[in-house]
Structure formats: structure tokens, C-alpha cells
Image 1 (cartoon, one colour):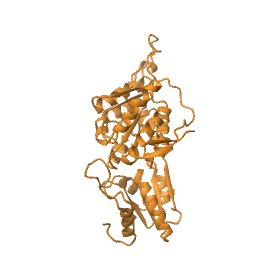
Image 2: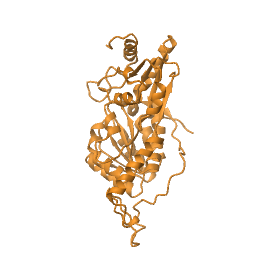
Image 3: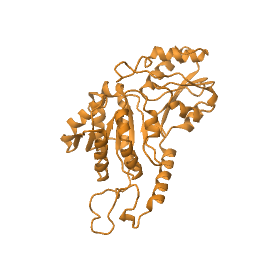
Image 4: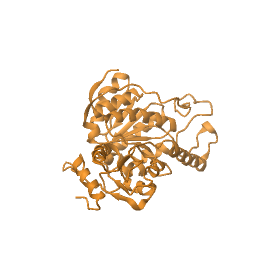
Length: 359
């Protein structure tokens, strides 16, 4: 396999195309713009289509239509633009239409948006938060598989470090196993048979004439997401077996935490780290096991405390959970501020170990 030096956005685009994505629509908004540009440059060469839409709402609904017709499709933005897509994402979840949403976030303040959503109805969105470009390439292909496996929209949570970092990567096809029959696709083959298909949240389609109706359909969708929560939780951890202190972080912030924990372990501190790879489903059972016996559970994230809620819910002892992160945005508003710095994270962890107050 050939390794290439690629910017993160270009590597993700290559992974999406390798996974079979053939339709992409979005509206430029930094740091998502690089992904849109990469897709517009590369998709036509494989017979795909990329549309620079006039708004995020328009782009998301184009993707909803393309996906319903059976084309592997994706859209994206940063959190501000994805806020405008929430109705469409909810519709896709409730009418079981799969596509991928790339949130190339400006920081870590979109955790609630990705895990709680802003649409209507009983749905959730599988969200993977890679820690680096290499993992983002892997997650991109996995998410296209999971979207179709579960017939649901899914999210990749990136950020400026992933979007704009250049790294040597290999983008090769990955096999995640068989997928169910695509008998939901609106491809016209049911026309004139009396059993044509509809994709609609009210689920009155002729394919199951007279259709399940809204109550049975929505109950089935809710049951489906309950089942997904039991099988798609992902995490990484290290040094938790003997840890008095466990630091929980996600995304690229977790890379900095891992580095600091390695330093502190070498200095004799009994400390470990835990990283939710899937923000939803949150790996709560694994976190409970990892924090059993811990005297401190420290949560580092670049926001006012969002994942903090999930950690408090699932930690073995919520009374030992302490927040050491915070809002930290560069003056441009487009990148992280000075809290995303290993020495700063180290100081905050050490302050927590001694009962002090983080600077």
C-alpha cells in the first residue's frame, strides 16, 4: 500500500471515497471547508458528485434524498452549521436513512450537540471521536458501514488539529463484514407493483401495506437505538488497574492527556487514562470498571463541562469526579486556546492530585 503525505481533510475525503461515498453536499465553514474542497476535487474522478450548497439546510436535505435513493452520501460542517441540519438529521434517523455527518468542530463544545442532538423524536446518533488523522481515516470507513448496518445517520467528530494536520497515511479499503439487504432503497423497482416503497417518519409505506403506522414505527426505532447502545460502545484505556487517579478525555485532547499521564507514571504517580472513542453510545460500563477503586476521576475537555455529565453518571463513585478542563478558544474563534497544551494539562492534573486549584 502507498503512503501519502496528506492534510487531515484530504485523508478523510480519500477514506470516504474508498468507503464508497459518491455524493457529498455542504456549505463552506472553517475548518470543515478543507474537507468540502477535497471532496469537490476528488469525487468527480470516481463518478461521484459534490455540491457546494447555498446553505447547510439545503446540503443536508440533498444528502437525505441521495441516501434514500441508495447512494452512499455524506455532509458536514462545524457545530454552528450542523445546528442548522438538526431537523434533517432527526428525519433521517426516524425514517432510517443512512448517511455520514462530518463535524469538523472548531473546539470541543459540540459534545452535547453530537450526543443529545437538537432534532425531534426518539433517536440518537452514533458519534466517533478520533484522536488523530490516522484514526479519523479508520473511523470514516467504519462510520459508512455503521450507518448502513443500522440504517441511521452517524457523526465523525473532528477538529482543527485533525482537519489541518499533515501526516503520512495509508488509505486502504477495510472490510467490516456483511451488511443487510438494501430493500429499503427508493430505486424505482417497486413502481406499479402495489408494494412501492416510501421513506417517511410516519411509516405508512406500501411495502408493508398497510404499513406499521406511526406508533409501531416509532417504537421500533426507539428499540433499535436501545439495541445499538448495547453493541457499539467503544473506548481505550491504560494504567487503570492500579490507578488512584483516572483522567478521562476524548478526541485530540486525549492525545495530550495520554502524553502527560505517561510522564507522571514515569515519575511514580499511580495514574491512568480513559478515552471514550464513541461519544454515543458512551462506554459507561467500561468507565465504571476503569474507575473502581480510584480516589480521583478527572475530566479534561475543552468546554464548560459536557462529557462531565456522562462521566458523573457512569463513574464508579461520582463523588470523586472533578472537572479540570474549561472553555479555551483562540482569538480567531477557529481553534483551541492555551488549555490545549501539555504543560498546562500537567499543572491541572498535579493541582488536583494535591488538592489545589488549577491555574
